[in-house]
Image (cartoon, rainbow, N blue to C red):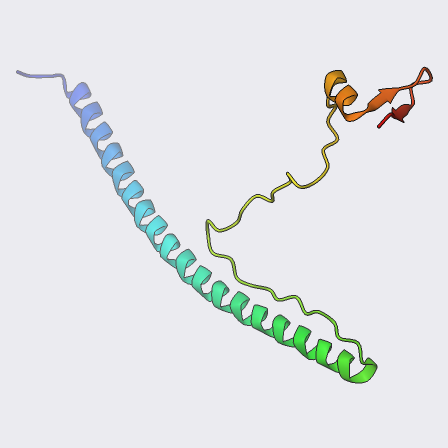
Length: 125
């Protein structure tokens, strides 16, 4: 089967364009892999630096507390910065804090909370 020379050249040009595109994408993939390794290396270095800084801040806090205790006789509690691990951060439990939501009329009557004619809160219990 024969095809026109013009269509053959279009097919060859498209193939060359696709080969160049694949080569370019493979090079970018290699570049991304190199960037990932570089980022992981930098993160390890940053973790070491942050750990060193945490130790320094803790040591200076303890030293300042000792100096205040010696100079003024005041013993100050020393907070300590501790490292956190990924996945160990927890959401604070707000259940012990007072709620500011409306409890509703039935619950308010049960608790002895009523409204006066002026709209002020009146505690009956």
